[in-house]
Length: 391
Image (cartoon, rainbow, N blue to C red):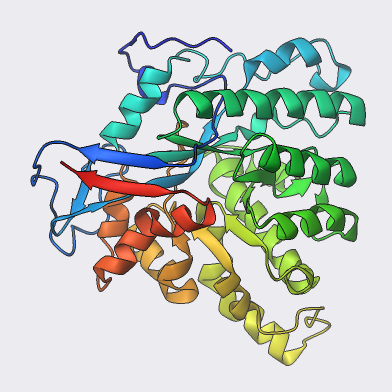
């Protein structure tokens, strides 16, 4: 893999993109050698901070204490895969890597510069959903995933203090996916995997995927659930507002999580470490309707779930990417501060470049709760060995 540290300052550089991504080393030490106090903040910052500009560059200091910040929602791609898929009929003549705003700046220094500017110590890198090829047969899927995951590992090895990998698997082939996950974790040092919220219209709760869920629970690694739009709604999403993204993406996650609950998947695999993108979609904000249906069993509402749907929110983690203080506050109310982790959606247009400020804007949180949401919880889930050092 080739990458350069030459800076290319431009409008596109802020949305820069790596060809590869991540795998953390055994020990991470962040050193702030200046006695910096200008980053200290009051217990609460203003509600609804700007989402386009950062108020908190590294290092993030809260009430005099240096905070570890870890971003679960940070994408990359491995453009070297193009040689494996070029000309495949399933692509319909399209190149998923071009045009792409991230290919304009593959310089890793641009990504690090952006992380520093937005207060992020560590990114858990995942492959962009546009580079998930569920149409690939087992042989091709094996080559694609191996290349993607190995490239992620290369970048992690080069920058072990800034990146960890949550790689990819070919979930359309569940047994292969289970073996790919084991290889990525045990051989490449990945800390988990990212899945799309359905596989060509098949729900993740379908029993065909049980071999993968069993392996993920066995390994005790993070499974990051990320939508890829809601294809069934495309006709109604047409028109202004990019509804396929702003409604379709969270709806896709809502449906996936609901099936995992009502089909009993989260009971059969209660040890899973699921992290849901975009605050879990619409599910947490309207969980009362699911609870009511469960309790009343209205026209078959009761499924295979063993408890009220709201109880499952306590065993799912949610990224903080809901954009407004009151939405994040509601998410915390429903799921608990212990279940919220920082997410930015770097480096796309829906990125929140002020995710640290949004967590700090929620009133009533303790410093311990802030520290957990900013990075402490993910440090545990991703098995980071982190030492923050002032000096």
